[in-house]
Length: 166
Image (cartoon, rainbow, N blue to C red; front, side):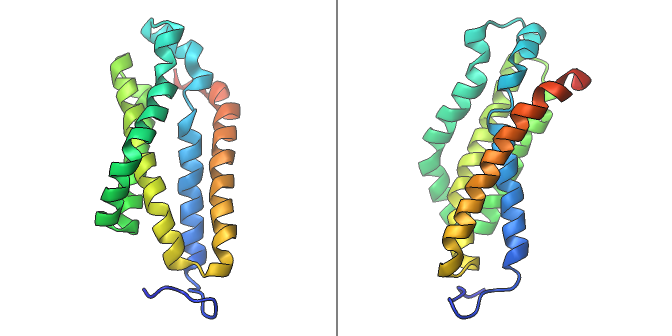
């Protein structure tokens, strides 16, 4: 699809925006989702506070380390496929309740972080491709809002639904 101009924006961009906002929301939900569950994780795996904090620390570090290689990968895959791959890797956190060991749980967090790095690298290309210049600030701001709402949602809902998950 050709780049939209300020005169003719692609009408399908609303679907693209909704998809990106859901992906950004999911990224926000996953980023700190483990934090309110630390007491349950400590009990389940018999780890201490310093060890359980790796679930957030390693995620942050992995995003930072992976961003440059993820940007190269996103450029090779293209924006669409980088968001698909990034989203699938982030979805690895859905397997967290099934983790048989702390190491497996930590691996799901690393998968999430690498997926987040790929998603963060692929998002600008989608935004530039589908949105005219006059809408760039709005869609970029909406993406950050979606991430923030995801973090907030995970902090509020995580401790409430964790007992039901075991």
